[in-house]
Length: 335
Image (cartoon, rainbow, N blue to C red; front, side, top):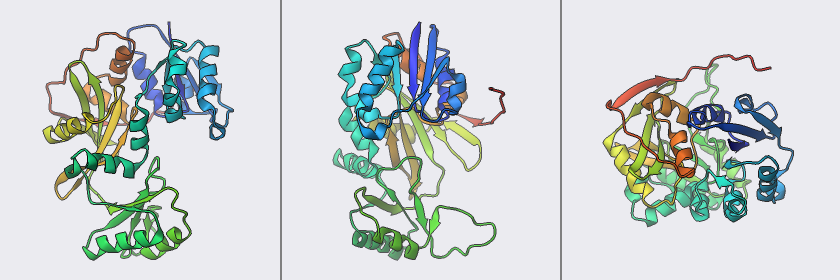
């Protein structure tokens, strides 16, 4: 029996656990979160509420104690990922396998969108990036906005370290609000300047063109027979498309060579001047991976789990070049 722990994941871990249950071996899934009603709780064999304040530090030691107490064989961390990886030897010494990318330097780079861009630029892949500015004070922010605006480029900004686009804003001085416009993402340049004037800039601000093309999210896994890539084209609705586009896959292969990732990771693109450019790189399974797996009929989480456990990993791309997919939410009685 293999006991697998997911700690404090997104709700879509519900689907990832379901996919992993197809691993062809006995497995039990243990879940935990500070949110006791987290959705993936209802796909777990055991559930525990986390009362530990991860901001206090020492979270890796807390996780190690949890693993030993609950006889965990495989730990799939999200919360505290960097700290856990920096303390990987503590887990390995207890025979606990980390389902995580194990290069702390590369985790730190991908945590910060500006560091990600700087790294990609320094390895000679600047052609995969849109133009951008890294701002460390309000003056630099104003200059960056003015530079793009003067060239007729629609501007957006976000903090370098951000998750779920919480700080993403589009600077829009032309839109007229009406009863139907309720987007929290649009802001005038005057409002933006007031915000940054009071901001400490401990976390840098990235200013760049607003890229309004559909996002392409590529879920990846390095294997003995090559890099597995599942490019998922998003829309504003619940329709998606898996499209094995040669240019997207070529660019992803270029990037993957320079990141020491042996477990699943994700590269996101949008179009700029007709070319696919990198938005960000996530060193973990993405929130939409289950959609890519359903459309491609390739179970990437199971392949990664088998790789981690030292088992053979066999896969092949489907014969089709593209396939549509739809995400449907269904009610379920769980109490």
